[in-house]
Length: 627
Image (cartoon, rainbow, N blue to C red):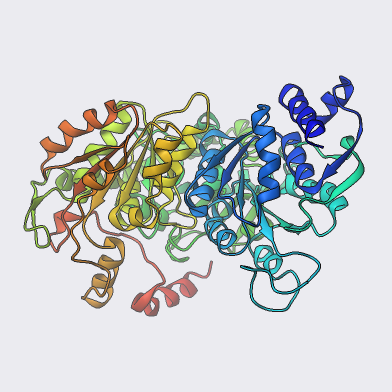
């Protein structure tokens, strides 16, 4: 059995797909396979060669298959210290590098950890396979670590709530399971995680004569677009009638080419606002770029959203912070909504829906506008709108500059003067851009201030999980760069709260040879929530702590990690960053930052949000607007 398995593993390492191996007579078409090996063969057949996770008693047979296939060079397995970390690294691998990985876990708690972290790929539209050990199918009695209720397939109920799922109760159903998996993780539009549950007693079951050509390859569905010219003619008509046009992008626009977006702006006279996780689609230096908008948006971004009479929305779910809980578009008469998801297309009233792939739809819309003889007149009418928004952008830049240039402020907890978080973030962002590093932002006030500060000139230089806002994502995401042949240099921007959620990277970075940097902004609290409590109720409550942690010492305690501490001044941080960047492994820069009442200590918020005691104001406003 093992020799036959080794032969199959070597054939996959050489030929990559089962069809190619069979055609080359390297493998016979019909083979006796265990269920665990069938799953691995099926995933390799779809180009899934990277596996990340934590083994347990619920995955020992799967692990034995993976051992043999890795020794043959057909796959690579990365063992980590947390299933949450595994999921975040997998999401980053798909997001940053375009690779489709698989996360593996044992039964029970480990699977629950990964399931929780799958919120990130689910919320951001990323295709990741999840392989979970599951309870045995003979119901011989309760299985250790299963959900302790005497019902069938309880974990399937959990995973099915999160996304497409399949329990491999019958080994011969592996072909159907893998077809459904490929349709979820590999599709061009609306990719999502797929959860494959592997009962412990089914994994080692050998099925004779399985047809290798029945295993599905990667789903190849081309970009789709709604048929017919009428919607595009109608959209062009709405654009002709409007003089205060806004184009706003969400995460579903991440594959739109900058050239296509620019063509649309040139032809419509619109200004542009982006969601937090797609900066750089339009260069930050473009005068039409009003930067980020929403609950934690900019002065200019929120002004453009509130004053526009026509919205062109691209690839957005309408998340509460993206549109200020439905109150951002106060004067919009009509909306042109471009999306692949019918429910997202129906998010707002007064909408003309243009379903399909964002890039293809925008090209069709540009073509519909290209022959417009009234374009010159429309662009002339829009000029005052662009100038009006440009003045707000100038105000925003001046507002930020005051905070970037502010001297260190006296901090009550650290009992010394410290850089404000905006000032420290600005120095760090400028440095990472200078050296060409990729930025990952963790949840919290580091993330919120960060996407107000980031000024990318091209896309895919910043990754921030604003879909699930999962604390600990950024530092775990760094590990993806240890799993590719030509990695970029990644930098994680994290707070003390987020870092302590997922510090396993300090070990796993060394284990897997990662070169990266962690910038840890420490204000000894969950600053985003403290400031929200203070804004709503004038007091913070149980969102801070008094524990002093020397994070640079903590980093240095891991052999191979380099730790640095910022002295509280701009000069200290500027001097440290090149030294941390020069380290050949993982470096961590501990940056204590100010938190307090001084207005120069933060960037503030300029949008609405339906939380806490703000609901009494926000909800009636949403109904007044009526979108």
